[in-house]
Structure formats: structure tokens, C-alpha cells
Image (cartoon, rainbow, N blue to C red; front, side, top):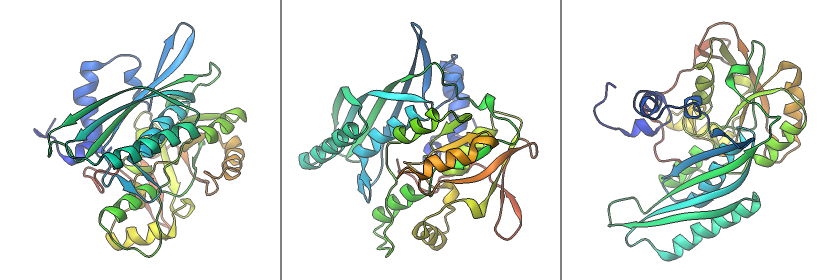
Length: 336
């Protein structure tokens, strides 16, 4: 590794994050489940397939339009299970709390987690609490683990992706990241931007039950849509081409990104899913999404192509084409 110290960019989900995982963690912990680098590990146990995932949440501020760190932790973990085709069942909850943190705020976060878990029909069955000296953390961090069951008839993998497969996004991009940023910086933006923080299992269950030939799914959180698409092409020899005009972006998000110089393709989402599906079934999947409140803005935004191999390209609204790479730095730190 070129860097001798950890930077914020190592947590961005971009190039430095992937370098850290592939050059430090993966060689030392490598095994069949981990090497897949999925949102959840799929573990064969006594004839069953168990999905297991973990995530830590350090969002700043703790409360933002559309959610808070508790709701984010529950929904984010549920979604990491759902996108591998698992039915979420059980969660853990670990809290690292700064000395002096207001008990009323902690209660609010815990209540939010309870509401989110109940809504998604999952149970928080174990947990841990640590309190550290004032100044050691930024108020409150939450870690969650999740366990789910994968039906034996479900098989999702980037290895199944073929030329001509379509790329679908389940709704507008960048809502979560810009909602957090707007609240953090007290921008006072007139157009209300709300996080898309939501559990995706119900929506995904409908798609998988439809019989559509879904090849792969991932929720575009850190690093946004651009990073997720790059993660897909990095595992194969094919490329992806997406249409700028087809990508749904909330007008408030678009306007704020233009003002601040951000690209919504790299902004985090917390209630969206990227789906790679056969061309034959793409329209059906899109219609199923549009019938759901969480997918009403769903769109087919691109396809898998032969060239350029291992690259994601964007056809712009003015007729040009540009390569969409992973970011080296971090547009918005501490958004999840």
C-alpha cells in the first residue's frame, strides 16, 4: 500500500477502501465466503444457506431529514442481506457511546431502531454497550450484524452477468448523502431533501418471486451508483454503459450538487438497489418496482457491453461519452 497512514478516504467506499480490503484484510482473512466480497457472506450450514453481514455507522449528524443513525443501522443491515437474496431474520446492536451523551437522545435512537426492526419483521436479539471517555468518539457509533436465510432456488453472482443484460436503479440517486450534508452544514436549502433510508427486502422479494432472471443486486451506499457499477465490472471482463438522461435524480439533489460541485453518481443512497437482469426481463422488473412505493422512480439506465472491458462509461445528455471511475478521495465523509 502506498499510504502509510489511514485517511478519511479509506472509508469512502472508493479506490482507497478497495485497496485497503484487497491488500490488507483479504490476504490475511481470506476464505471462500470472504473472497466473494459480497454485501453479505453466504455460509452453507447443515443444508441451509445463511447470509451473514456486519456494518458500523458513524453518520454525522446523528439525526437528519428522513432518518437517524438508529434507523440507518437497522435498514442498512437489512438491505445488505436482502440484496444477496436473503430473508432478514435477526440483528445485533452494538453501541459505542461518548461519556456525557444525552440519555434522551440515546432513547430516541433505540426507539427508532425498534420501529425500523418491527416494520421489517426482524428481531434485535443480542447486543453490546461500551462507554468511552469524552472526546474519544463523536457522540455515538452503532454497529449491527445481521443474519438471514437464502432460499436454495436463489443464486445471485457477478459471474452470471452476460453481454446485453440491463442495469436498473430502483429510484432517484443521492438523496441520503445530500440530506445528511444539508443538515450537517445547515445549508438552509429551500427544496426539502430527505434521506431514502428504507428497508428493501419487501421490494426485492417481489422481484425474486416474479421469476425474472436477476443476475446480481447491490445497494449503492458509500461511493454511490458509480462505485457500485465499478465493483461489478471489476469482477469480469465486460463493461457497462449507462445513459445520463435515464438516471433519476431528485431536482433538489441535482440543484444542490450543481451548487456545491458534487456529482450525484458518487453520492450515497440508503434505500435503493442496483439490479442486473436479463434484457428479456428488464421491463418486467422495472414495472414491479414502479408498483412499489420504494420503486416508483425506477429506471433502466444502461446495459452490459463487450467494450470497453472493465470500464463504466456514461453517455452524456450532450452526446458525449466519459469514463466513470471510482473516486480516489471522499466527496462526503461520515454519511453512513
